[in-house]
Image (cartoon, rainbow, N blue to C red; front, top):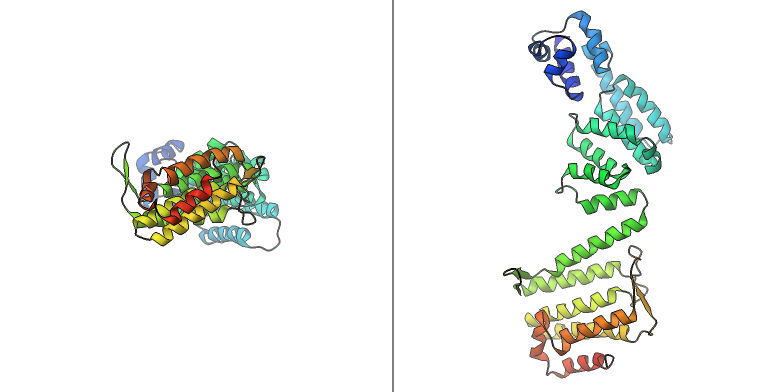
Length: 365
């Protein structure tokens, strides 16, 4: 009996997040006495047992360890309620879990399971009880619960918090090495069915990923200069970017806002091929890029070009805006090649290169 009560006092004190000195002050004893209770050297006076049990919100049987087996049985019952898909209404599950929590109010695993059930109900039901669920989450995260229970708790709170910055604070507690702000926001918007915000954040993230790939193959010399240091890696990065674009573009049409990006990266892919001595592949990439630009040029003057994808339906351009960018793109890549496309000067006198230039420049006059 002495061993069980020692372990239980120590566990309950930690779950309540108080020190030995604070517990001693509560019962008019010394810190040394509490220390001795917890290490099993002594145990509290019999008249203190009900008071200590009441302070921790448990029965004297639980405090004394008379029903340690039934404690785990109760917790297992809660887990079974949460895991089983037995047709039981979620609110009924919460009701049953709350009855167990009344006997074990300082057990973080039960609070976590209740939190999960509210999450399943959806954010509207969760936000009705946000104050209580926030208390549950704060208790769980300050307890001795294992890492994954705390992780899941913070993830749930990121989704159900009313205020976005409050939600991000829960996410930040997990650490950026575990979840980025962008991933946390996408998860929150998806849970809340906020498709507009989800699309905006997804597009920002996609642009960021593309920009990282765009820099692949370059090494920085100083604040202003870069040089191409790995043509094979640069080629692979352009192939990867084009594959990503193909995932997001609308396959039912070849004329969407991705077309400009596709042509630009085709030119860059061509320059990588040429650096690697892959001349035929270079010509093919240039001709495919020109094909894409011709499709833009042949659009009616009042044409509207959109990101026609299920994920991104946010931005549209008129042909004039695309046309201005196209002229600059053709000039810098084919007519007066600069930067990574400067290598095209080495093939500028070939018939195949001239044919590609002539094919597109007639649209730019």
